[in-house]
Length: 258
Picture (cartoon, rainbow, N blue to C red):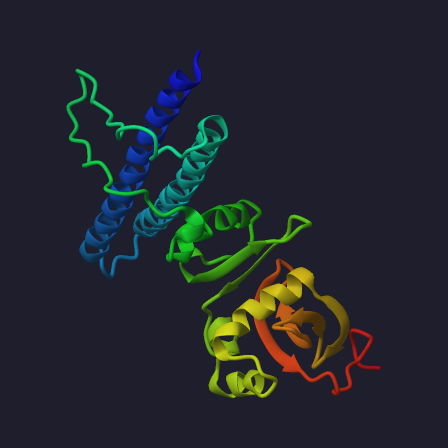
């Protein structure tokens, strides 16, 4: 098979994946609408079947969003392979590829996309952007709330650390309380950089001691300075608390106070 023929097949595959991603969007919307209708119709019901159906609807929506993100990853791979073979991406070097329905296809296909859909890494919805990490956390049995996830990151050793919106007692909302923001700003970390600092510290920092009850203190290079930040995580590596630590502040080398 010639390079031109391979590229033609790749472009056909890319177009089919695009349609599949569009279908996941439609499925997500349909599941959400159906769940809303069902919830309204069964409001106040204590039947176990109602709770089970609501749970299955939520899980179905999560899996569809995960599929949407993974299909985006497949598109990136196809596009990269096209670059490798021909020196250009799928959308360059030829007319758009349309996929004609088969003769026995009675369904109405969605209109073709006018531009490349966002990849998982570009998506603003954390549930889609971090769908792969969320799906793996769920497979591991981690106590993750997909709708509450703000950011997730896979570490070099395979662990996944993440932070959820949470509330005033733990999570990002707790860390971004007015008092805590002032604490970080006092060591020249602006509000919009706090979350990033926590992930950089866990990924690249070194634990140099502990503060509080059992909060490890990480030392890491960030924004051109050597900094210390204390970060609390669960045993599953969910971040739930943090505070800045001055390099002049005394910290315990041992985990617990003696």
